[in-house]
Image (cartoon, rainbow over all chains, first blue to last red; front, side, top):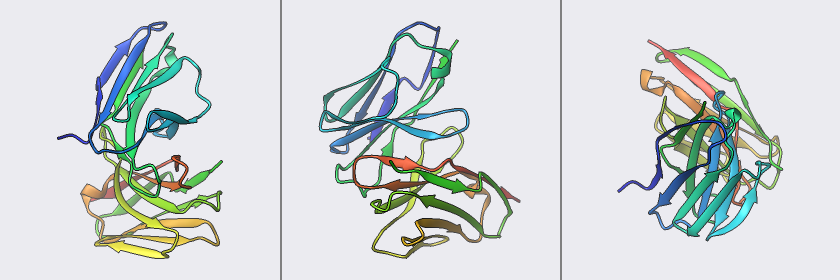
Length: 113
Length: 111
């Protein structure tokens, strides 16, 4: 009965590879997000989707491409991985009106070697 | 866009003492201010939040205060316990599907 679940939990891959992280929420929320947490623990928003539509795209390289097949899923695909992409990536969801709690997935620790 | 600053970056307090973490924000349109706790290796989880029509909110040992004029808000933890050790994040939300987080405070409770 996990509210926001993302897979995989750990991902180790070589530079130049392409990888995907999947996220699903069963809370009935319309808004989903991807956050990146670097080694200093800073939480930076990458993307925000509302009912499958892109709302926010922060200054993220276009190697990162989110895809939302339906409002319960927001996947993140990363092309040509670089060492600097190593981080923990968190998916989250909330109600679209803002002013409400954002629920986070358990995180995906991506290590690029 | 919104900019949220958080201080201190690290904080150590003796068990039983109080801890205070402070945040400032830049966008006067922001009207929702949650606080998240992240334990080691875990996801951030909401511990308390406050909306702009309220100046203070308390939940057992945790309280949050908001000063909209000065654009700052604070988290207060009283009677600290070892399980309070974690990284705490403040955040500000202007209702535009963008929750901006502060840089985090690593709180250590010394037994």
